[in-house]
Length: 369
Image (cartoon, rainbow, N blue to C red; front, side, top):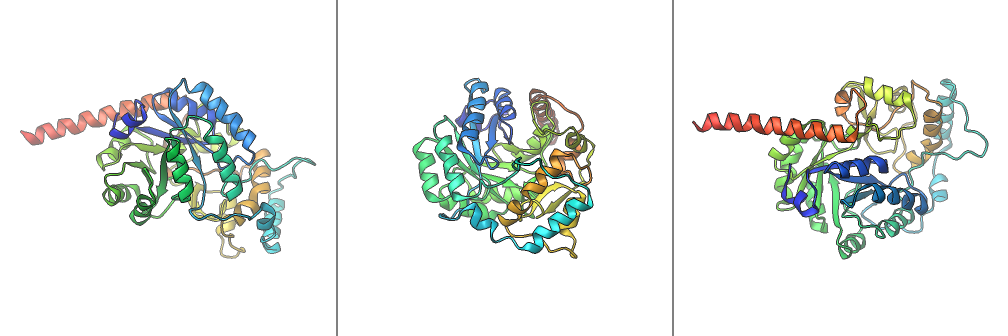
């Protein structure tokens, strides 16, 4: 499963795996793919360095990357306290009422929220980069589009390729103009922040828009046959995230959440602003329904929403409150029906890819005669 991009990065399979877990990223890399560690949950540089140490130690000398969340424009001097002060009392009351309705216990005294997305902030994201460039990362991906120009230049000075996610051909062209090396075309089906165009339409549009830049197909890909479809549409690899959540190496810290993922069908997700303030595909729960209800106060823009719900999400996860318990995940969740090792997932992807190629070659051979 080689492409020009995979050969350039020195990987066996053109499978790029995004994950918040260093053990999963390392396992993807060991299996011949390219593990990408998500950095948005790290608020302290030492924590990111610790997990990059683990990733590097278990990657067996093979390449890996990092995914950050940075706005294209520099926004310096804004602190977390400044943002917290912007959150309306009405929204804080709505969260408190919702948690009380479902009997969600408080965190223990002195216990900090374990879910606090502040990686979007200039000071946090740049501190992550200060750590990242001390490691031999080969790819820096940005989930909010093109990072600031000085970040792209810094990455290139370190010999690191820069990737950016795009939900439309227009966004992709902007990335190309900014000097991005790889565009991830992420379709509507994907987990987390995603646009409104399906992968089957989006991928060839982006490939055409940014040629000859390499494109990775993302969204709705969970089998080798779907990998083959992405490459047939012109992509030079696939970007997979949701598929790794139920692997044995993943550390969700919740048997209840794993069980919900394994039981969910492809129709059990929703694209909601409930988690971060931007549309993000996730499991549909009573939590997402409450925020999407027109009778409620409505969600706040990013990053206010993420800070508003941080403690609530931590409490829901800690106490495994079933009705409210969810996570970002794509429509491919319907294929995630058992816990398997990362190696087993990659093996299944490569076998499915080979089956698809054999089938197409057979069809093409008959057509030629």
